[in-house]
Amino acid sequence: MAVKPVVLALSRSGEDVAHRVAALLGAQVHGRAGRGARADAFFPNALDHARDLFAAGVPVIGVCASGILIRAVAPLLADKRAEPPVVSVSDDGAVVVPLLGGHRGANRLASEIANGLEAVAAVTTAGDVAMGVALDAPPEGYRLANPDHAKGAMAALLDGRGVSIRGENIFDLEDRGGAVELLVSEAPAQGSAARLVYHPQRFALGVGCARNADPDELWTLVCDTLDEAGIAQGAVACVASIDLKADEPAMNEVARRLGVPLRLFTAGELEAQAERLANPSEVVFAEVGCHGVSEGAALACGGDLVVEKRKTANATCAVSRSENPITDMPGRARGRLSVVGIGPGQAAWRTPEVSQLIAEAEELVGYGLYIDLLGPLAAGKMRSDFPLGGEEARCRYALEQAAQGRNVALVCSGDAGIYAMGALVFELLDRGAEEHGVSDAAHRVEVVCSPGVSALQGAAARAGAPLGHDFCTISLSDLLTPREDILRRLHAAADGDFVIAFYNPVSKTRRTLLAEARDILLRHRPAETPVMLASSLGRPEEHVRYRRLDQLQVDEVDMLTVVLVGSSNSRLAQLGEGPRMFTPRGYARKIDGDLAAGAGT
Image (cartoon, rainbow, N blue to C red; front, side, top):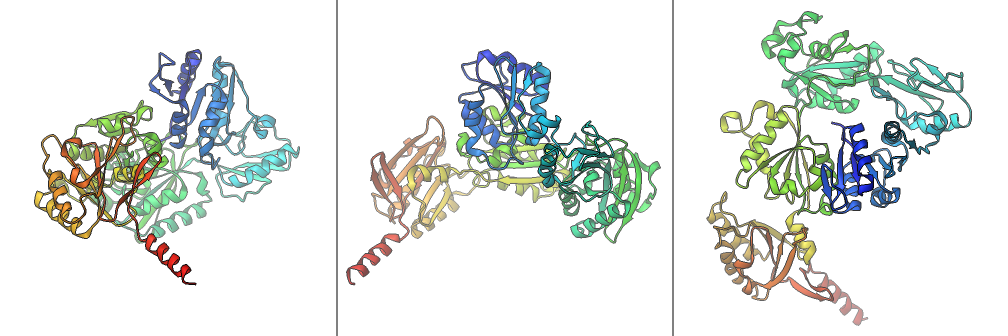
């Protein structure tokens, strides 16, 4: 789904304007805590919050001085073709400024805001100033086939070479018979710096295939079909099929190569098109419950069939055409579950990819505290909170919600694949419904896993470099792992002289395993072995301290504490700001050897 802009209100003087802008765009207002009375969510630091939104791909509209937004996003600027718009609006609503140029619809967004506020849009992009339009940003439902030529074409127009229009005049420009041609065509056409080609996306591509068909077979069929019909690939608005094929690699690959969404229909929705099919099939009806998949899916997207079913041994396709470009996508999406780790909690330790997946999600699922740690990034989203101990229900719910075509984010702390929900998601997907797994529909959703900063990494960074040599992690929770297995692993790790990170070291009712672990380790490494205790990492209440292994006390550890126990080689370096823990890898021996060799020459 498209990510909605967020309007930032930094002061009471701009609060009313911020809400007027939000109403124009159907957006939310995020307000600076202590500086405003009304907002959908509040943030403590404007620079951090604007930067976090920008990194997540969210368009940012700040009712504030332009310099604040510029300073916030400047460290992240890299690719103007991928970055979201950033727009500043003066507190009085008189001036609207697209700060990073007009790419990704920024000029259009600024003009829309200015029109609604009866303000001035301070657009400085040369093409927009000269012609009032950005030729690399066509209206919705039209695709520019040769965007790399847009800059040269705009330069030519600014040199006074004029424009000529062929086909629809989608920009409402005056045709002066100039040297730069703007061609709007459903058919393939060669573009250049002197010719920009735009394709109206009026066509829907219906596809079907055998289970696990070769993606190249379906892709070749699609390309041949479009070529023979004289339809440009850029004129296709979507790929459509029956929902039973949502997870087919071939169909998803065709949609990816065309750069359009895959849209899905139930057998009943496709059967509603039965009377319009050119090639109904009783065989297909017996297999999936409708008389045609590719033709039915194309027709279900609207319009009329313009290419009847074409087929190969394992694939079929058909094409429909609508009178107008398809902008309101029919059917439903495949559904996506993003399994994300948000790190220890602070935004600075959350990856931009995770922030973007959360921004794109329609629903957030997780333990309530973890969703709360997202702060304003979670504002306005449907959220489903589950308590500790409800992990299976949490993952099952997230998968089934995605199975309905929703974009769902399963929010975990640290890294979702390290003692978190990632493994449980795949365990449920590995089971059938009769094995207490999930529904067939849930098996067909897209699952995306994105890494996060684990508690282990966060603690190690705070310590210094305790993981400089071999290490392992052990969970001391015997809720799901038999106690005997935990003890066996403790003995093996102690004998192997690994640095060990203990997760889930204690709970209210489980207090003995950490003490047993300490005693086991003391049989294999010195009493003065350094131990780091790191609590609430990345949060304001963060607390880091060091102990000797023989002085480790269970009572100063809780469930929010990571316990890092050094190997027999780990030590503390005394720095001005305090001790730092590290584990040598062996470079000291190499340095000593080099010194000895140098002394002998």
